[in-house]
Image (cartoon, rainbow, N blue to C red; front, side):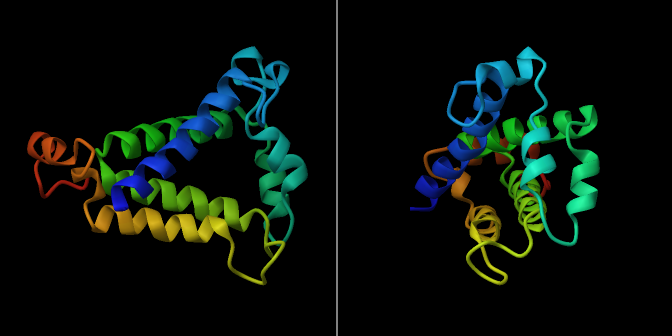
Length: 153
């Protein structure tokens, strides 16, 4: 089950990257695709944020550095999870991204504190702790390549 959860979360990150990059029409139109000059962080950070950090996120909306960091993060986390490699760093980066996204909409719409972003963050950490990359993934091979004591495993 952990391997299935890893693959599912990997697809969530990778799909977000692909849709925002190419404007596949699910959440991002072709006209707003990153390859067509769109800014992947602009829409949500400009109009979807609220709460105590809204001004900070509004200031980052559409910034080139924010776009690149966000998109590289989505791609790297998604690929790492799907392949089962670099699980510690992928889990840490993914959890950080989820907590930042959670903080952008405080308080969450349906609960005073908890929402799906925090659940994803907890599951990501759990995936690394149970070595979910070893099942249906390249985790064992990766550990042999980079060393089992490395933060990259």
